[in-house]
Length: 288
Image (cartoon, rainbow, N blue to C red; front, side, top):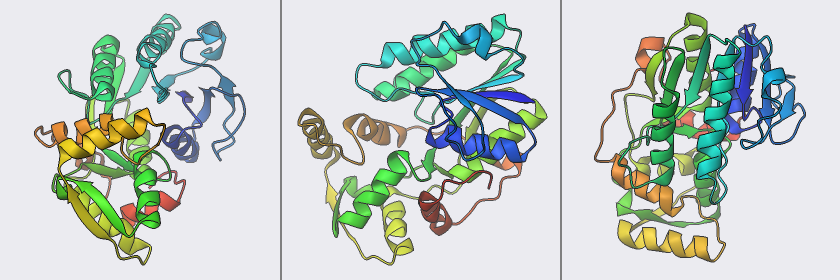
């Protein structure tokens, strides 16, 4: 199949491109800058989410579009929503039979997290018989929140942890996620898929395992989540980037009161140990 991945040079887009190439697919995609930075030799064309003029030519001959692009910059909600919808519409006009939307475990319409609400809106706006919605948990890999958590563990002996890190976190390795999406594409599957391992560790367990995987000993300092949220808001105001921002903090607390059943076992993806997931933060991965 000819597969087009938006955000192909990102953490998930790049790993997915490498994985799909090993499955024999032909991969192209888009990123903010043109080039080939996936490790799979997949060419990427320059396309920002609010730039639509190149879409018809970019999608010629494509069998599947995977929406991984996401602008994490400030005030980018409209760009993410309208840009992704425009690409999905262009794919339908071009007669492309299938699309995959990379959503999130945090995608709830009433979520206090702006990211979660945006992903829920995208699910609604893109809904159709050609769409497969993928909701991964926290992705363990060399980028994103997991990598920032790893850097924090490496840099500090004492780690402030909201509510003592007692809430459980759905998690999936970057390699397992890429292989799961590859199998969905190979089977021509549509519908909604929640992709994370059944056993959900607490945030505290994740941080301690990251430390152990690097031969480190770290002390976790419980912090009331309200205070932690205020601290992340202040840090953002001062231009200080923390491993978890206030939006992620709100999602962490809100998600603890919600539940989704995992569909990962239906795809036959083996569950690695928490240690193996922690070690995936050091590898760009591909398929599991």
